[in-house]
Amino acid sequence: MKVLVLGGVAAGTKAAAKLKREDRSMEIRILAKGNDISYAGCGLPYYIGHMIEDREGLIVNTPASYSALTGVDVVTGAEATGVDFASRKVSYIKDGKLHEEGYDKLIIATGAESIVPPVEGTGLDGVFTVRTPDDAQAIRSYAGRDDVRSAVIVGAGFIGLEVAENLMADGLDVAVMDMAPSIMPNAFDAEMALWARKQIVEAGVRVMPSTRLEAIVGTGRAEGVKTDKGMVPADMVVLALGVRPATSFLAGTSIEMEKGAIVVGPDMATSVDDVYAAGDCALVTSRITGRRMYSAMGSTANITARILARAIAGKDASYPGAAGTGVVRLPGGLNAGRTGLTEEAAVREGLDPVSVVAVTDDKAHYYEGSSYFIMKLIAERKTHRILGFQAFGSGNVDKMTDIAVIAVSKGMKVEEFDAMDFSYAPPFSTAISPFVHICNVLGNKIRGEFETMSPAEYLETKAFGYRIVDVMPKKTIPGAFWVDLGKVDGPVEGLGRDEKLLLVCARGKRGYFLQNRLKHYGYTHTKVLEGGMTVNGIPG
Image 1 (cartoon, rainbow, N blue to C red):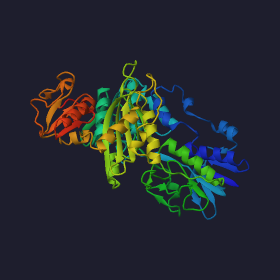
Image 2 (image 1 turned 180 degrees about the horizontal axis):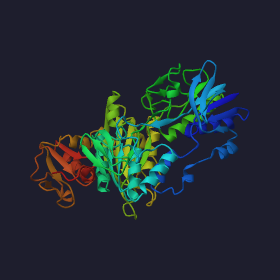
Image 3 (image 1 turned 60 degrees about the vertical axis):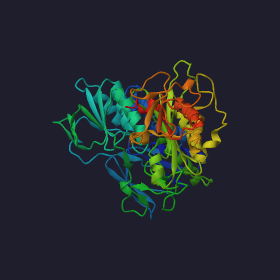
Image 4 (image 1 turned 30 degrees about the vertical axis):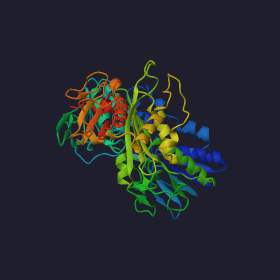
């Protein structure tokens, strides 16, 4: 059997290597558009910032080393131009000449290409996209010039913010703009993204949400960007607006696609017999909703490619769906992680979500280097099934996120984590895992034992009409009524039992303790501000 693979980066090389291990008798050939295969696309921003010093560090395998390791034949510089599914032939251009290649089974793993907006100036010197090692090398070289001191990143997603962090580390003044009203749109809920944005700004990055790019300006080279809010000077511009599936060569064929992405089943088979697809050129399904979704992630590409190979080899293999997991390091030493649905997405899906924002220690508070996590947990109100999770912190947010991945993937309920025996020692975690802690907090909220005002509600000015109660150890909030928590053993003089009271402390914990006592003494309208002043700032 001859298997032809179109695409030689994550999904293509993974599928070919796994398939060859499954059946050494198969003839497998990869047609790769570029000269580099199997490169670390997710590492490109860190090469730009010199954290990966040598370009070779981005290359997992050269064509020669990959072929020697796997037994798969690789043809580089071969760009697919069309597929005749009836005759089972692929046409491609190599060295300016048109070629044809037949197949018994075809794997399409052509990935995606950077989105370049239809505005003037994208062809100027000093304007870049971030997709290949060549792109990263060009950005790094240009940023190192003596006459380059500032950069504008267009796009405030993961890649754009990673590039911003690394260019800033190189000493450039960096601005990031996005049409969306918040950074990392669709990945984090607005109130969580707002908190992260504030930290990024404090780190020295100018952030411009709700800003539309109208043109890149300059004479011969980039000198700035024109936006709907005005001009922003810059010596270089990086376009990080996301990607679109690289499937234009399939236009007019019978293969089913949605918005350019190939539709596949659980075994990664397409609508055409003996044709499979994986990676950034294909859709997957959501593990939570079952709906089709686009997941342009290296992890998704590798996982689905492995399943695809097992399916072609005749094994029982199917992909249960993506959870939308992602982690990113942001400017200022801030780490972020997320999985599942945002609260906003859950509402759009017709679900009835309930959520909580909590701040916890990331390890024993007395241990050197301890800090905190800001986490948001989203569950289905009726069933308590965990739907999504978001976290920020300077520590290992990936650990918290990965626990949440299990919860989301298995449809686990908030209460199922009550007695989970997660690893603990002071250098690593807290006695009760931070993830278990937020599950407990959300459980208390669902049961009505913890009545709160969320950061999102606070931003919507729903605190109007509430009296602010300062629950800090010492008077901190100007104009607020301060309560000495340790001395509350009955009704608090000066606070009415039916008065609307918003209890505010550093993180929310002391507010919860006070609420518990006040309820016991007959107070009926108390709310605790979730995340306290750590998330929401000082009320004023």
